[in-house]
Image 1: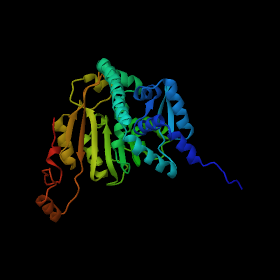
Image 2: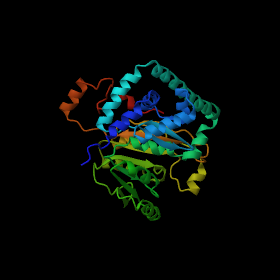
Image 3: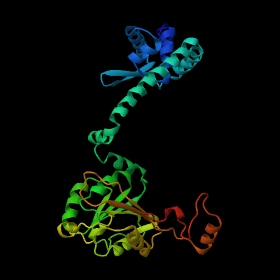
Image 4: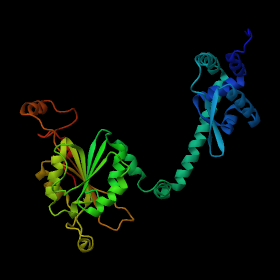
Length: 348
């Protein structure tokens, strides 16, 4: 039995015994910095900074990660309980020194320099930022990221799914997608596209007679499909039937236009839909007042301007509930008889 086994904590104590290393660790406990930034803060030669970082790293006080051609260093965030207690004691003493106060002020200068570099880039690139971002991340990056706002427990109907592009975007963010189309060619393409997505149910059916159970959807989407439907009102009424109380319908389609060639060349049946027309269709189906928003035109798009209309299936209430609701409206909202805030009134 060895009576003089080395105690690891003693080695870690030795690493902190040097005041420069303790100051360095205090800085890295609050910020992640490069060697050059640490050199500026502590006003030491780069070789000295590197030597101290190696000692701290060898004793598990600091961690580093590669970023391009340089490395960033920070204090280890997972310490053994004995090391954590030791560091708390040392940190309290070091933080109270004038040298640590100076280090803290110089860190702010380093961080300000970082911000200046970013601001210089944005100042020079502001006019081309949208183009630069789309070249780096694609034109749909912002829209796809917004899918994260969807409730992960939802069942969503993609009504008139076509080749399944929208369903493919929705599926990772919701519990289930029911994709419906009546074109055999489109359904074949959708099934190939969506085959690996186990939460997408592709069904054949007409939008005026959906193969979906009553009140089974949390949200439904009619994306660039309404202008192909002989009776849009019937499709909207079917969407209403399939939505749960409180469920939402999103319609994205064309605003009114005079593009006659779209009727002949692309089989369109309608020359777009005005705010009043959409309001009438939704109201006739039973939806609460909707929001109608013209969408910004895409410079590369050759078609008419699009709109997005959102409507909600009102939550059913009893006469008694309606009376109570009228007596005690939600703070900050004036609600109509359906319980839908007046702020959701149709706007052109």
